[in-house]
Image (cartoon, rainbow, N blue to C red; front, side):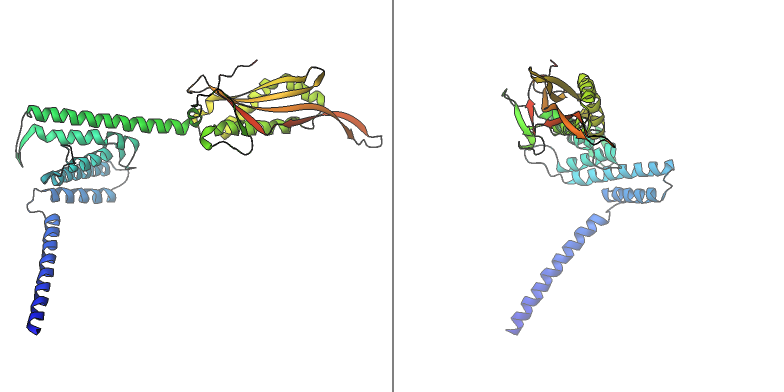
Length: 352
């Protein structure tokens, strides 16, 4: 029994040693170039170039030149290694190595400092397809290489592959551009419903889903309404009436200041404007007014446009004022009350 046990132990050690030997041989094959002209040499040259460029003077053109050759060596070495025994993407004639090399080339051409930028992603598929098609125009290996015209079927598959990848690049570009537009012009995506009924929203607490109402329009009306309340509430009635006579001009100027401050981060700020309208609520009571405030969207939309509306009621009230050394006096001041809701109206705004 002892001899059998020792035999099994010896066999186990032999298997472990063989496994470790195989791993070491693989690592040795990857790290040690079998000859001077190999993909490992190119990778080492790229690492050496980047190391030298990092030690060079940042303001020296030599630093950029050395870094440039570092990228060239990396691209060449990666392309060589990944095409040595190509692994193809299922259902295509594109090697996985071409995709990896295409990514590196795209980063080299458009990224570098930031590595991944929009153009890096957009051009990646097209560059990978071109890298896949280039070897078809050459035959031979090493230094014994000459040009050739690919076979008809190879040319057809190459054209189809490049065309499909260019189409994919176009779709990626469309997605990125659309995403940038929606980030800069978020209010352009809202008026997509087809019903004609106005939507109402609580001015302070939004009750609709977030994707149902333009937040920037609500923000503008919040700020404009708050400023109007500060300017008119409790002021003398004669002063308020003067303000109301030029209400549209006053509201427009006030809205522009608010838009420039609170929508400064959005390119869409130029498509918003504020309008105002004053009407008498009761013909028999000419001193009671309704002030309508509008935040109007003039940018692109699925219809002619849309706007948001809030209303405030303004009326005079008598108020007692203590006078020094005299009887209290009564003066007329303005009282303003604003509705807690705004209307979201999907149609083109017209000033009546």
